[in-house]
Length: 99
Image (tube, rainbow, N blue to C red; front, top):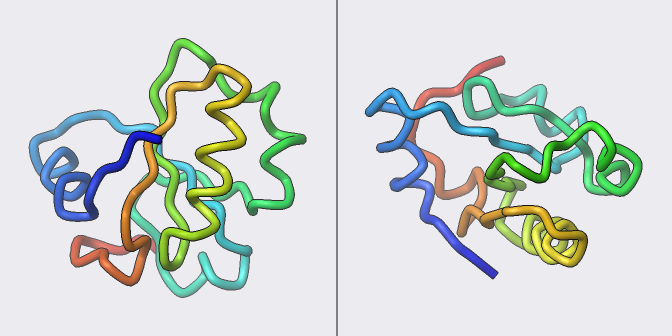
């Protein structure tokens, strides 16, 4: 499983890179703030939202601590998606928040 730190994600955003970030936390958790432009797909819905994802794109998967995003990353990886888990999740995030 590929991994990236929250700081690396933040730096990529600061550098203007376009990132596809999927936040697998529940809707109520995301309401407390998310990484700007991240798309919320709660973990339980990832399987059903797969047809909406493009296997040609790269995705960074985020949750609160890194556990649920690890599950989602391994699951999507098994279906051929190019996914990277953000270590530490939103607990490690020091960048901007979007509400």
